[in-house]
Length: 240
Length: 389
Figure 1 (cartoon, rainbow over the protein chains, first blue to last red):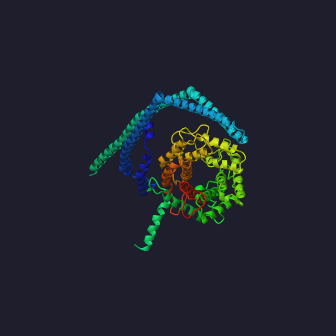
Figure 2 (figure 1 turned 90 degrees about the vertical axis):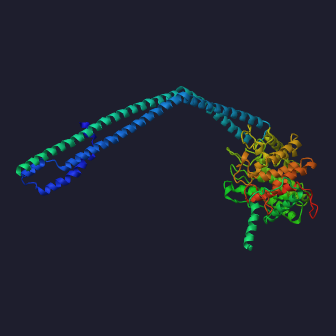
Figure 3 (figure 1 turned 180 degrees about the vertical axis):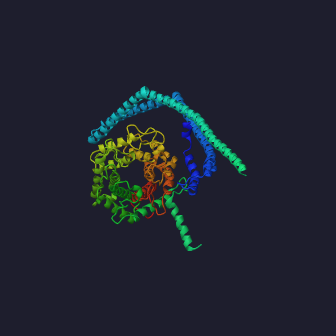
C-alpha cells in the first residue's frame, strides 16, 4: 500500500530509532565485530525484542491519532467550503434581487447630481454676469471671477457627461460582468465543497488502512513472540 | 477663618464673573445700573490705553490665532483703537476721557496705514472700515471742528477710505478674506462688514473725503441684496444663497447681522427698512438670544448652533442699540431695558469684556462695543459731567 506508507507519520522512524538504538549500542559492547557468533546468540537474533513490540504498539496509537486529526481537519475544510458556497449563493441572489437596481439607481443619482451642479453653475454664472453688467467697475477682478465661474461650469458639464457615460457603461457591461463574477463565485465554491467532501472520504479510507496495517504489524510481532516463548519453554523442559 | 483663607475665597468669588456669564440678571434693567456699567467700561479703556495713545498689542496674543498674517494683528489693533475712540467720543466728557480721546485720535491720525497681510488674509479691511467710521464720527463732533483736528481727521478719513476704495469687491461689499484666484481687489465680502461703513460713507461724501457716491451706492446695493425673504441677511452675497437646514442664513444665525444691516440701510435712506422691520429684527434678537448666549466665548468660530460665533455678540448688541435709536423716542427705553441685561451680564468686574478670545484687541473692541451700546440707551448725564453726546 504505497499511499498508506506515504501517509504514515514521519515521526515513526525516529521513534523507532530512539527506542532501538540504545539496544544496538548495548549489543556492540557485548559482541565485538570480528568475533564468531555463538549458537545462543544466533538463536537470540530470531527472538522478538520487547522494545520492537513497544514501538509497534506506539505505531498503532500514532496511526489512530493521525487518523483522528486529519479527519477533523478534512471535516473542517468541508464546513468552510459549505459556508463559502452559501455566501456566494446569497451574494448572487442579493445582487439579482436588489444589488443590480441599487447600483444602477446610485449611478443615476450621481448623474442627476452632476446635471444639477452643472445647472447651478450655469445659473450662478448668469446671475453673476447680470450683477456685473450693471456698472462698469473693477473690470479686471470681475474678469477673474467670471473666468472662475466659466471654468466651474465647464468642469460641471464635463462631470455630468462623465456621469452619463459611467451610467451607460454600468448598464451595458459592469452589471453583467458583476453578475457573471458572482455566478463564477458560486461555481467555484461548489467545486471547492466537492473537493473537500472527496478529501474527507479519501482521508477516512487512507487512515483506516494505516491503522489496520499498524495493527497487523503489531499482531505479527506478538504472534512471533508467543511462538518463540513457547519454543523456549520446550527447550528448557528438555534440558531439565 | 484665617485672613489668608478669607482673601482666597474673596478672590475666587471675584473671579467667577470674569470667567462666565452671569445668568441671574433680571429681564429688564433701567438706566442707572447701565450708566455705572458704561462708566466702568470707559474707565477700563482709559486705564488700558498705551502711552502712545493706542490700545491693544498689535501682535499675536495666543496660539488660537497663529494662522493669521503678522500684519493682521496690527490691523486689529488699529480697528480696536478706532472703536475705543468712538466709545470715548460718544461718552459724557471728563478730563480723563477727553485726554484719552484726543490721544487716541492723534495716534490713529499718525499711525502707519495698515497693509494687506497675505494673499487670503485681508483683515486690514477692518482697519479701513472702523478707521473711516471713527474719523467721520469725530469730524462730526464740534470739539474737533477747529485747530489742527479737521486736517488730522481728514487725513485719517482719506487714508482709510483709500483702503476701502481699492478693495471694494465687484459686487460692492467689503470682507476680510480673499479666495483663489487671489487678486489685488478681493472678491469676497460680508453683509455685516459692509453695513458697518454705509452711513459713514454718506458722512464722508458730505465732508468731501469721498468724491464718488457710487462707492456707497454699490455698497448699499450689496447689503440690500443680502436681505433674505425670511428677514435674515445672508452672511455673504452669493447668486444662490445657502438657506437649507441650520444654515447661518437662518434668522437664528443672523440675529446680529439683522441689526447692523437694518441700521445701515435705514440710515442711508432705504425705504424698505420700515420701523416694523426694525422692531421685528430686534424682537428676534431678544427672543432667540439663547443662540448668542451659547456661542459666547466659544474659541472656535461658528462653532455654535446656526454657525453663530462668539464675536457676533457685542458687535450685534451695539448695532441693536443703534437700531433702537431709529425708532420713535417713546418706545426706545422699553427696548433698551430689555437689551441691557445681555450687556451687563457679560461685563467683568474691572469693566472690560470680550465675547470671543481674550486677545488684547478683542478686549478693547468688546469693551468699546459695550460702552457704546449702553451709552446709546442713556438719558444725558446731569451731575458732574458735561459735553456732547
